[in-house]
Length: 173
Image (cartoon, rainbow, N blue to C red; front, top):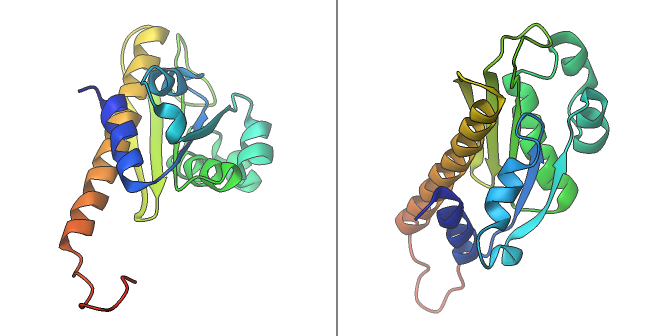
């Protein structure tokens, strides 16, 4: 089963929802997800915020952070993932930002990227150093963020299994 299929199945099993914020990947994460039958049960929507001002205005990324560090920064990815979840009313969010190439941008080399996932159990950010032409960089970032979300959802499932069962006659918290 592909990562996108596992993610959709895991979100549906939890009764959870997903929102996607993309910059570097330009819609590829959303496309991978919507290729999965039944995704409409979990996907709330997506925002492709390629321009830096849209990251602040639409997704709530801190403007001072963007001005001081640029859009290719781990905290920007984290805020994109949390911001899109909040903005679109989803339990989980993902964010991608980076430089697809062919040359450097915003003081970062081609292939520098950050992906982030956000959920009730917290936020995770991964730094990527990717090689290859634009399509390869974008595809690798798409795979990385879906794998990161898959891992977060697996950890949430494991935590649910470890949680104590409610006492007989008492509702679960």
